Image (cartoon, rainbow, N blue to C red; front, side, top):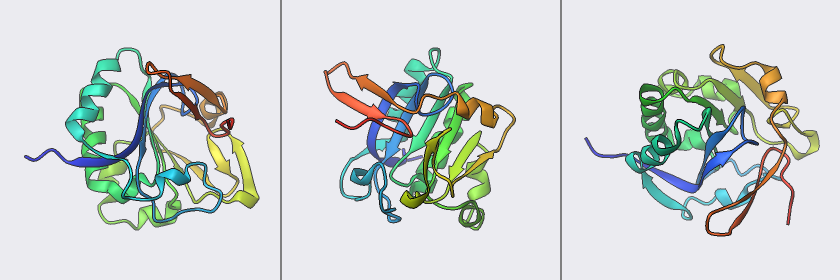
Length: 188
């Protein structure tokens, strides 16, 4: 079987502001929704970023799994890369005890109408759904704007767990790079 590829913007091996507990975070590259005021407009174009084999992403996740509580996927728009994303999430659920949190700009209604989506959602603990609406900015409990919805697809977390997540963090990489992340990231 061929190793599927995900178009990746950035992989962060250790974050506390992108879901409950210490998490690895993947920002995919490419989003045709392009919400005005999006926190990550640099992830919209599908020609930037790099193609990463699912096996390479799994190697990074498995190397850290004993230190992590979970894995978060954001973007870009993860659901625009469904086959590869589902393959990655299936492996995460089969090979680790990590929780999975997924951010999508699609509404819950749109997601439910997607072809073969149930198989992908079987691997997700929490889904944050809906386009970012700058006029309804909230930036709290992992919810960017008030129109977004949180869907607890397993009993692993509750809204209280999301409320305890820090709204922002600054990460200094091993290479000396500075990354700002979270639902309400500081700006340089």
